[in-house]
Image (tube, rainbow, N blue to C red; front, top):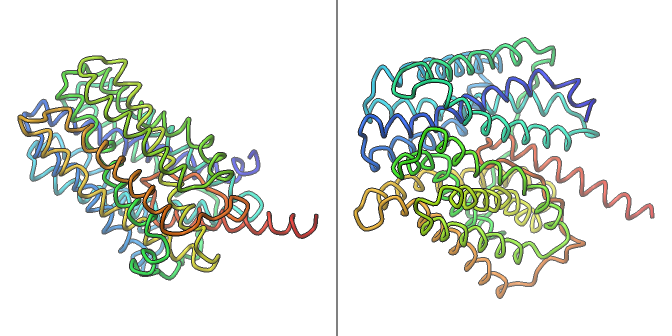
Length: 423
């Protein structure tokens, strides 16, 4: 671990600042939108716009990098992010924010692809898994830390938006001034969505449903909290509770995943997450109960992303795992676009109101649980001794990070096979 830090600390520090800036802008817009009097439906379109841009960026960024190189792409896209952050309070209009969020999502996707390729290149076969684990921890710590910065300034003014822009700008320095050489860039050949669906129906359906759950958390948690009348400090802690849960429970569930039937574990985790969402619907003004609900939901849905990738890998040859990763991330992104829109519609109706935030997540998670249960009747399970290693992943990562995780899983499988053959 020390070796990884000594060789990649600058890149990891830069990514940490990027995650702080991204986590701060999402929550800040949710709070500021309520202060501006934007409707819940309007905010749902604004929040969904990020995932539209992110999905487009994940497809186009690799081609940009091939044409002009890592440094130019990173500097250009990061500059756009910094500019849009400052423009949000200048143009407090839902349409302007929608356009800004599309741009932000596109740019963050490209920036992640660039930085992740640098990080992956800085690692080797001996420490690639540790590097990925550190990267995931940095991502989660960055987003959680961002929620504390929400309290630094007045969200009705411009100071906090400037702070988010400054944090993004600071992130350039460690990455662009790093001594790590610019890597040769290449991505795996994509596997068609139909092929992936035929190989792992549960993986595809689960990723789509989970995309809606994740985007509801990332995009609409602050909108829900503001509509529920929480104070600024309470909103900050509520949003953070989802990510703290994901960070705390990712590794224990990963350990369990490698020793049990993954379909049964997916059923159980989705059911517990759905139960947490149901509890959130009825807690209303019970603030500490809502924090616990957020922790449980985040703690279950965060690892589900890695679980579904690992389950899909169980039915793939090593040569196909990286190719499938991009398709799985794309499917997750499609679900993520729809998530805020459905949540916003239900929250904006008089029938459901704020509890609609939890209702959507409950329905999606229980649907995933039911589908996983049905899939157990369709084909035999893969014995735990024949399954690959679950590699922890953050649901908002780029397709390149998913390919990186696949490399780690393949290396772990090969190492385990060598140990078995030599014993």
